[in-house]
Amino acid sequence: MATQLQMSPQLEQIHGEIKDNFRALSNGFQRLDKIKDSNRQSKQLEDLTGKMRECKRLIKEFDREIKDEESKNPPEVNKQLNDEKQSMIKELNSYVALRKTYMNTLGNKRVELFDMGAGGSEPTAEENVQMASAMSNQELVDAGMKTMDETDQVIERSKKVVEQTIEVGTQTAVTLKGQTEQMGRIVNELDTIQFSIKKASQLVKEIGRQVATDKCIMLFLFLIVCGVIAIIVVKIVNPNNKDIRDIPGLAPPAPSRRLLYLRDPEHFA
Image (tube, rainbow, N blue to C red):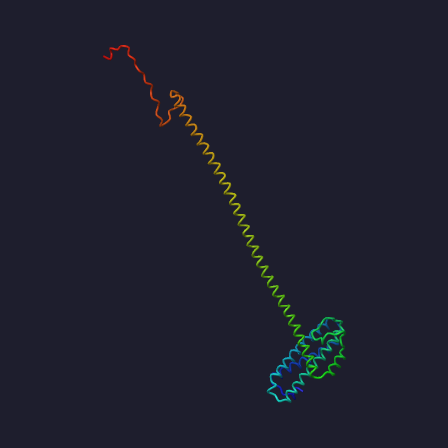
Protein backbone atom coordinates (compact mmCIF):
# COMPACT_ATOMS: atom_id res chain seq x y z
CA MET A 1 0.00 0.00 0.00
CA ALA A 2 2.97 2.26 0.52
CA THR A 3 3.64 2.32 -3.22
CA GLN A 4 0.05 3.43 -3.97
CA LEU A 5 0.12 6.40 -1.58
CA GLN A 6 1.27 9.80 -2.73
CA MET A 7 3.57 11.03 0.02
CA SER A 8 6.12 13.75 0.43
CA PRO A 9 9.70 12.62 1.11
CA GLN A 10 9.27 13.46 4.80
CA LEU A 11 6.04 11.45 5.11
CA GLU A 12 7.54 8.57 3.17
CA GLN A 13 10.55 8.43 5.51
CA ILE A 14 8.33 8.43 8.63
CA HIS A 15 6.04 5.82 7.11
CA GLY A 16 9.01 3.59 6.32
CA GLU A 17 10.32 3.87 9.89
CA ILE A 18 6.91 2.92 11.27
CA LYS A 19 6.72 -0.13 9.02
CA ASP A 20 10.25 -1.17 10.06
CA ASN A 21 9.21 -0.97 13.72
CA PHE A 22 6.07 -3.00 13.02
CA ARG A 23 8.18 -5.73 11.37
CA ALA A 24 10.52 -5.68 14.37
CA LEU A 25 7.52 -6.03 16.71
CA SER A 26 6.15 -8.95 14.73
CA ASN A 27 9.49 -10.76 14.75
CA GLY A 28 9.99 -9.94 18.43
CA PHE A 29 6.68 -11.48 19.49
CA GLN A 30 7.44 -14.55 17.40
CA ARG A 31 10.78 -14.98 19.17
CA LEU A 32 9.06 -14.39 22.51
CA ASP A 33 7.14 -17.67 22.12
CA LYS A 34 10.44 -19.55 21.91
CA ILE A 35 11.88 -18.03 25.10
CA LYS A 36 11.29 -20.15 28.20
CA ASP A 37 13.14 -18.13 30.85
CA SER A 38 10.85 -15.58 32.52
CA ASN A 39 13.64 -13.03 33.02
CA ARG A 40 14.56 -13.13 29.35
CA GLN A 41 10.89 -12.83 28.45
CA SER A 42 10.59 -9.71 30.63
CA LYS A 43 13.67 -8.23 28.94
CA GLN A 44 12.24 -9.01 25.50
CA LEU A 45 8.93 -7.37 26.46
CA GLU A 46 10.79 -4.27 27.62
CA ASP A 47 12.52 -4.06 24.24
CA LEU A 48 9.20 -4.49 22.45
CA THR A 49 7.67 -1.77 24.67
CA GLY A 50 10.42 0.58 23.50
CA LYS A 51 9.53 -0.24 19.89
CA MET A 52 5.86 0.50 20.59
CA ARG A 53 6.80 3.80 22.19
CA GLU A 54 8.81 4.71 19.11
CA CYS A 55 5.89 3.75 16.86
CA LYS A 56 3.59 5.97 18.90
CA ARG A 57 5.96 8.91 18.51
CA LEU A 58 6.32 8.34 14.76
CA ILE A 59 2.54 8.06 14.27
CA LYS A 60 2.05 11.40 16.03
CA GLU A 61 4.74 12.91 13.83
CA PHE A 62 3.06 11.33 10.76
CA ASP A 63 -0.23 12.93 11.82
CA ARG A 64 1.39 16.36 12.19
CA GLU A 65 2.93 16.13 8.74
CA ILE A 66 -0.43 15.18 7.27
CA LYS A 67 -2.04 18.26 8.82
CA ASP A 68 0.79 20.49 7.62
CA GLU A 69 0.44 19.21 4.03
CA GLU A 70 -3.35 18.98 4.02
CA SER A 71 -3.81 22.22 2.10
CA LYS A 72 -1.34 21.14 -0.59
CA ASN A 73 -2.85 17.70 -1.32
CA PRO A 74 -6.12 16.87 -3.07
CA PRO A 75 -8.96 15.52 -0.88
CA GLU A 76 -8.57 11.91 -2.03
CA VAL A 77 -4.85 11.93 -1.11
CA ASN A 78 -5.65 13.33 2.33
CA LYS A 79 -8.26 10.60 2.81
CA GLN A 80 -5.79 7.89 1.84
CA LEU A 81 -3.17 9.27 4.23
CA ASN A 82 -5.68 9.46 7.10
CA ASP A 83 -6.83 5.91 6.39
CA GLU A 84 -3.22 4.76 6.46
CA LYS A 85 -2.68 6.54 9.77
CA GLN A 86 -5.76 4.87 11.27
CA SER A 87 -4.58 1.51 9.97
CA MET A 88 -1.22 1.99 11.65
CA ILE A 89 -2.93 2.97 14.93
CA LYS A 90 -5.08 -0.15 14.75
CA GLU A 91 -2.01 -2.31 14.12
CA LEU A 92 -0.23 -0.69 17.06
CA ASN A 93 -3.24 -1.37 19.29
CA SER A 94 -3.15 -5.01 18.29
CA TYR A 95 0.48 -5.24 19.41
CA VAL A 96 -0.50 -3.50 22.66
CA ALA A 97 -3.19 -6.12 23.27
CA LEU A 98 -0.74 -8.89 22.46
CA ARG A 99 1.76 -7.44 24.87
CA LYS A 100 -0.89 -7.35 27.61
CA THR A 101 -1.51 -11.04 27.12
CA TYR A 102 2.16 -11.83 27.64
CA MET A 103 2.35 -9.52 30.65
CA ASN A 104 -0.61 -11.26 32.25
CA THR A 105 1.02 -14.59 31.56
CA LEU A 106 4.20 -13.47 33.29
CA GLY A 107 2.15 -12.28 36.26
CA ASN A 108 3.48 -8.72 36.04
CA LYS A 109 1.13 -6.42 37.97
CA ARG A 110 2.93 -3.15 37.23
CA VAL A 111 1.12 -0.24 35.60
CA GLU A 112 2.39 -0.28 32.05
CA LEU A 113 2.82 2.46 29.53
CA PHE A 114 0.32 1.29 26.94
CA ASP A 115 -2.54 0.21 29.21
CA MET A 116 -5.87 1.16 27.61
CA GLY A 117 -7.49 2.74 30.70
CA ALA A 118 -8.31 1.55 34.22
CA GLY A 119 -11.03 -0.98 34.89
CA GLY A 120 -12.17 -3.63 37.25
CA SER A 121 -10.47 -6.39 35.23
CA GLU A 122 -7.94 -6.57 32.40
CA PRO A 123 -9.45 -7.42 29.00
CA THR A 124 -7.96 -10.32 27.10
CA ALA A 125 -6.27 -10.04 23.71
CA GLU A 126 -9.37 -11.41 21.91
CA GLU A 127 -11.61 -8.84 23.61
CA ASN A 128 -9.22 -6.05 22.61
CA VAL A 129 -9.22 -7.20 18.98
CA GLN A 130 -13.03 -7.46 18.96
CA MET A 131 -13.32 -4.05 20.55
CA ALA A 132 -10.90 -2.58 17.98
CA SER A 133 -12.87 -4.11 15.07
CA ALA A 134 -16.16 -2.82 16.48
CA MET A 135 -14.86 0.72 16.83
CA SER A 136 -14.92 3.17 13.99
CA ASN A 137 -11.72 4.55 12.53
CA GLN A 138 -12.21 7.89 14.26
CA GLU A 139 -12.79 6.21 17.61
CA LEU A 140 -9.61 4.21 17.11
CA VAL A 141 -7.74 7.40 16.34
CA ASP A 142 -9.19 9.12 19.42
CA ALA A 143 -8.41 6.14 21.66
CA GLY A 144 -4.87 5.91 20.33
CA MET A 145 -4.30 9.65 20.71
CA LYS A 146 -5.70 9.58 24.24
CA THR A 147 -3.39 6.73 25.16
CA MET A 148 -0.40 8.52 23.68
CA ASP A 149 -1.29 11.75 25.50
CA GLU A 150 -1.60 9.91 28.80
CA THR A 151 1.74 8.27 28.15
CA ASP A 152 3.31 11.65 27.41
CA GLN A 153 1.93 13.02 30.67
CA VAL A 154 3.37 10.09 32.62
CA ILE A 155 6.75 10.61 30.96
CA GLU A 156 6.67 14.35 31.68
CA ARG A 157 5.84 13.72 35.32
CA SER A 158 8.71 11.26 35.54
CA LYS A 159 11.05 13.82 33.98
CA LYS A 160 9.96 16.45 36.51
CA VAL A 161 10.58 14.05 39.39
CA VAL A 162 14.04 13.28 38.02
CA GLU A 163 14.81 16.99 37.55
CA GLN A 164 13.64 17.78 41.09
CA THR A 165 15.77 14.93 42.46
CA ILE A 166 18.82 16.21 40.58
CA GLU A 167 18.16 19.75 41.81
CA VAL A 168 17.84 18.62 45.43
CA GLY A 169 21.01 16.57 45.09
CA THR A 170 22.88 19.58 43.64
CA GLN A 171 21.68 21.87 46.43
CA THR A 172 22.68 19.28 49.03
CA ALA A 173 26.15 18.98 47.50
CA VAL A 174 26.57 22.77 47.52
CA THR A 175 25.42 22.96 51.15
CA LEU A 176 27.80 20.18 52.21
CA LYS A 177 30.66 21.89 50.39
CA GLY A 178 29.90 25.19 52.16
CA GLN A 179 29.72 23.48 55.54
CA THR A 180 33.02 21.70 54.89
CA GLU A 181 34.72 24.98 54.03
CA GLN A 182 33.23 26.62 57.12
CA MET A 183 34.50 23.78 59.33
CA GLY A 184 37.96 24.22 57.81
CA ARG A 185 37.91 27.95 58.62
CA ILE A 186 36.81 27.21 62.19
CA VAL A 187 39.67 24.75 62.66
CA ASN A 188 42.15 27.33 61.35
CA GLU A 189 40.74 29.98 63.69
CA LEU A 190 41.00 27.60 66.65
CA ASP A 191 44.65 26.93 65.81
CA THR A 192 45.29 30.68 65.64
CA ILE A 193 43.57 31.25 69.00
CA GLN A 194 45.56 28.44 70.62
CA PHE A 195 48.83 29.92 69.31
CA SER A 196 47.82 33.38 70.60
CA ILE A 197 47.03 31.93 74.04
CA LYS A 198 50.47 30.30 74.20
CA LYS A 199 52.20 33.56 73.25
CA ALA A 200 50.14 35.47 75.82
CA SER A 201 51.08 32.96 78.53
CA GLN A 202 54.77 33.34 77.72
CA LEU A 203 54.47 37.14 77.75
CA VAL A 204 52.73 37.08 81.15
CA LYS A 205 55.50 34.91 82.57
CA GLU A 206 58.18 37.27 81.24
CA ILE A 207 56.37 40.27 82.66
CA GLY A 208 56.09 38.51 86.04
CA ARG A 209 59.82 37.79 86.08
CA GLN A 210 60.59 41.38 85.13
CA VAL A 211 58.32 42.75 87.89
CA ALA A 212 59.98 40.48 90.47
CA THR A 213 63.42 41.69 89.37
CA ASP A 214 62.33 45.34 89.61
CA LYS A 215 60.98 44.76 93.11
CA CYS A 216 64.30 43.28 94.23
CA ILE A 217 66.21 46.23 92.80
CA MET A 218 63.88 48.71 94.50
CA LEU A 219 64.34 46.84 97.80
CA PHE A 220 68.13 47.02 97.54
CA LEU A 221 67.99 50.73 96.68
CA PHE A 222 65.73 51.33 99.65
CA LEU A 223 68.15 49.51 101.97
CA ILE A 224 71.10 51.51 100.64
CA VAL A 225 69.27 54.80 101.13
CA CYS A 226 68.28 53.79 104.64
CA GLY A 227 71.95 52.88 105.42
CA VAL A 228 73.23 56.20 104.10
CA ILE A 229 70.67 58.12 106.14
CA ALA A 230 71.62 56.14 109.27
CA ILE A 231 75.32 56.91 108.77
CA ILE A 232 74.58 60.60 108.31
CA VAL A 233 72.49 60.71 111.44
CA VAL A 234 75.15 58.91 113.49
CA LYS A 235 77.90 61.20 112.14
CA ILE A 236 75.95 64.28 113.07
CA VAL A 237 75.09 63.04 116.51
CA ASN A 238 78.61 61.79 117.34
CA PRO A 239 81.10 63.62 115.15
CA ASN A 240 84.14 62.33 117.09
CA ASN A 241 83.38 58.74 116.35
CA LYS A 242 86.40 57.48 114.41
CA ASP A 243 84.79 54.19 113.42
CA ILE A 244 82.69 56.01 110.85
CA ARG A 245 84.54 57.43 107.88
CA ASP A 246 83.72 60.85 106.60
CA ILE A 247 81.05 60.83 103.99
CA PRO A 248 82.26 62.31 100.69
CA GLY A 249 80.69 65.67 100.04
CA LEU A 250 79.82 66.23 103.71
CA ALA A 251 81.92 68.88 105.43
CA PRO A 252 83.75 67.78 108.56
CA PRO A 253 82.48 69.16 111.88
CA ALA A 254 83.82 72.56 112.94
CA PRO A 255 86.46 72.46 115.72
CA SER A 256 85.42 73.68 119.13
CA ARG A 257 86.55 77.18 119.99
CA ARG A 258 88.70 77.62 123.07
CA LEU A 259 88.61 80.97 124.80
CA LEU A 260 91.74 81.92 126.57
CA TYR A 261 91.02 83.84 129.65
CA LEU A 262 94.13 85.81 130.59
CA ARG A 263 94.55 86.44 134.19
CA ASP A 264 96.85 89.46 133.75
CA PRO A 265 94.82 92.40 132.67
CA GLU A 266 97.96 94.36 131.93
CA HIS A 267 98.55 92.34 128.89
CA PHE A 268 95.82 94.23 127.16
CA ALA A 269 97.41 97.57 127.92
